[in-house]
Image (cartoon, rainbow, N blue to C red; front, side, top):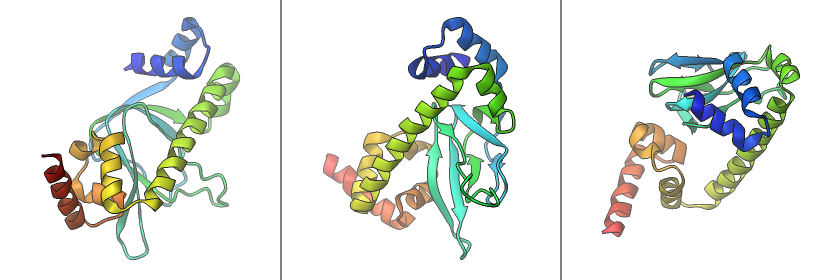
Length: 194
């Protein structure tokens, strides 16, 4: 698992192998069972994560009690809760492991110490956030401008592994449609392929 993290660091830093190894030895990697709640909606987050293996669902519960899925994090994706703009610092989302997961766990209280110890780690984090934010902006713009069927086809192009890894009702919520609509769309798309 540490090899995955080393490959990721190589893409975003110019740290030499010795420095990378030191960081990998200094960080916490934990295993979580399927169903583990990493963060509850309304709690103040104390940790951020990087997925080495598994799938984590980000969702919120609206005022009517309906769960709304806003993201799925899988291998080589960072999970951070950027809520510093909120006065109470509470999370608008919950995070739950949909599979058994292996995650890098970053403690937000000691983050500055790690950045002081490894200055390029802060650069890597910034580059990673910029990269992810750019992708999210593009996905959001595309999502708003597309039909439900186009959203599903885009998902098949960009994240096809989610279709088999995620419960269909959660996938439908993520696409902004009902499970019944998703079922109909899947049938049409399948028919069009053959």
